[in-house]
Image (cartoon, rainbow, N blue to C red; front, side, top):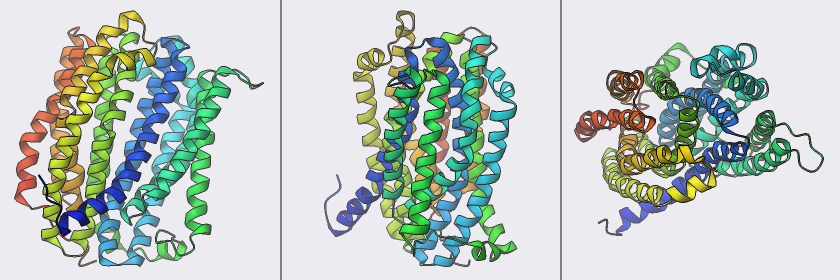
Length: 454
């Protein structure tokens, strides 16, 4: 056990100040999908399946923007430790340009070619029509979500995680209220069903964006992330090259991992529309339970990055050891809680009788393996990325997913395996990731200052 000496007191104080707001914000973000699913569930499995497909596309978008933000956080964390304010502004400015470019691509497909996306998952005419309705509105939200996400995640790297937390919390309340009014047509509002859910989410995202930008540019006049056109003009080839050499693998990693995760859903869909609904309920809820462990990994990457940027290498290594124990413990606790709450979750989602058995098995698998997945997430995000060891983390994640778990899952799907077996096979990537990830972390090759010469 960790004794509460001065070093550990500093560690836990900083951990709590960073991780609690990050955890709350991530829980809020995860809750948006769960709330949509819960409210839509009363309209039947067709509506759930359509929301599930739209959420898969959003997940891919979110991970792509997260990849850009993740690369930015690596540098901003270390530049913050180095007290290099100008470089921080250059990083956030360049990241916003990249985020806008990526988000416009996603908006184009959602608004002008939705069938291209939907038909990957389902050819059911009812599902296609419902999902097109959802995309026709939600597609406008992607650019503003991109900018909000980049500023929110980058604020964590300068030890201000409360900004994203507060703005997301306000947006969540807006989303809940508008969901109730627009999905079901309450208090004189039109009953819009799936389309109402997308409109509620769009308005909530606009509110979140407005609050973040107002804080950065108007309320907090000397905010570290407040960049302007002059900082964009200061970008030179060497700076961009250094940034992309470490951040591009993060973007490729997160985007490719998201594509692989979406492909799991494609494999699940081979079991039918009911399987899509079951996997949507299970995955959205499972993400809610793992989010705490993921947030600790995110908080650890910031703390380790700050120390590495300040050339406190041994402190960073010491922090990494403490985090590893903490993540395992949290993962075990959350896994047990997930399993114990299966009956309540099934009741909350109004699950049809024929789906109960499959969803129960999926939740049980997720609960048992949650600590395993949480620890691997910490190794990738918290340890390897904090020191810029992004190329190895890219190789580790993609090889385990694309050469192990995805082939196994698709093979089983095309041979008629039930949905819970497909979910179990998707976890084989974590076994291989653990085998090759832990030795890399123990080697300490990740513990480097990557901004010292920039």
